[in-house]
Length: 216
Image 1 (tube, rainbow, N blue to C red):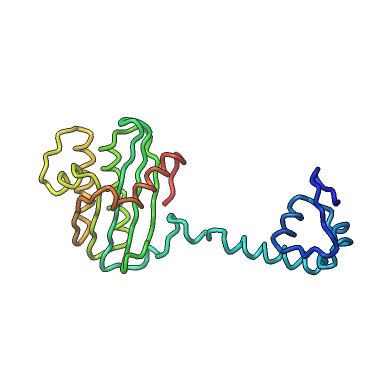
Image 2 (cartoon, rainbow, N blue to C red):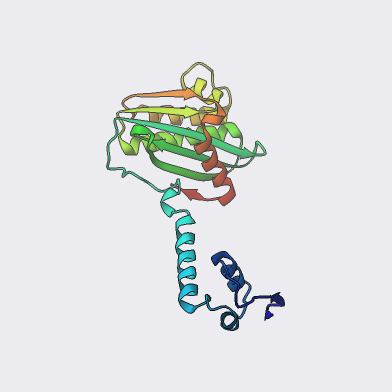
């Protein structure tokens, strides 16, 4: 019997311990030196190799920082023929704690940039407008020749296109700002899309609420 952390392990000299079993014993803080006296296959060299292989496996399994959506993959100095910008606003309570998310894509659907911003207490419609305003500002930075905005807010899309009137005073001010900024873009369109097609921007907006901050 070998004892460690209150665990009893019976090992005969003839037993052939597998790598997984040996790692399990190491994890349980079994006295490996004593265990080695009962089984000659348990050597320092073998244990060192097992631990090194385990370390490499964990490093490969760990997600890379480069997969973070907030990281830029292009510079603002790069010019784009076309950008596709997904925008979304999230409000927990409507009105309630709110944030906006913007996901910018370039050629071949390559992510260019992702933004999250907490905007405080607001309604969902206000958040949607502030999201499109942030998206327009980002498009202006990248000097895109053509920009397609995508939103899951039908109200926002139709108001920006002039199909719906803007009756709410607060939204009217945001509408005016959005229209002013849009004049700086050479060519643009806005399209209403289903919510399931707007997952990136939605994720960023909800992240903004959770962090109550800004990443862009």
